[in-house]
Image 1 (cartoon, rainbow, N blue to C red):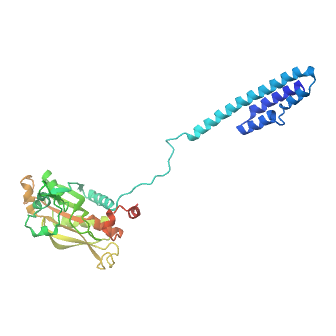
Image 2: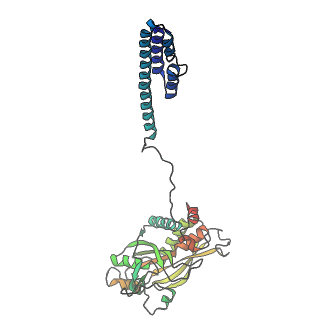
Length: 350
């Protein structure tokens, strides 16, 4: 091996080092030229040992120059490849906040909340405003102003949660009717309102009873409001809620705060009136109570709001249990499932 051979090998090594595209290829170039056993430039050490004394000086300089230039080029190229790899890794790890993520599990409405929304939508189409009120009421709003004095026999149907301590006469409301009274006290008619919300009664839990449940009540007050307006409103609402083929019928009933009063039945929307388990094979389902607002209730309010002269205005009210409708509509056999918090049950309504 001559000085020219070593110089040519050095130039060839530099060329292949510059062309290496990754660290594996660069390592193969290093072994090819500087490998301890068989490296092309490394063989120059053997040639140096076998060379004549007068040739060793020049051959040694050529060997060292080729080896050092190759080692420097290898180190430099290795640094370049590593820097390039870091840039790629950083690009892969970079978080693009605008990139769509994997879909997350989403919640959904509780079946009772869904029904309340549907009822409110129907009411809104008829010009009704949804109004909320306190769940802790006093005896006056919950009973007395609704024509239910302390000795009235109708109070026997209300197993009430009374609050002990200094809050004498305060209770958990047994219906949402106090919202109607608070609306009357707030200003003169005309108005149409819906009053959905939780109510409480001391019922022993069983498949159809729970100490806490939901009601929605409606109130319409204006001049010249008739029982025909009440029938038309409820017939429209039932058809909008259960389907246009549903029929309604009214039976005389009694409520202390309405006169006359009626119970409302609808033709079974599940069997079309032919008879099934949900309607107890009668073809009809009793769904709600209603009636014309008793003039005595307007008389109670008139002391604070002169616009409620029973001789000049009239109105109607209606109310129904939302939980019962949910059980009927979705085939739920136990009201307790609605409030158990069991995701296996609730996820069916997603």
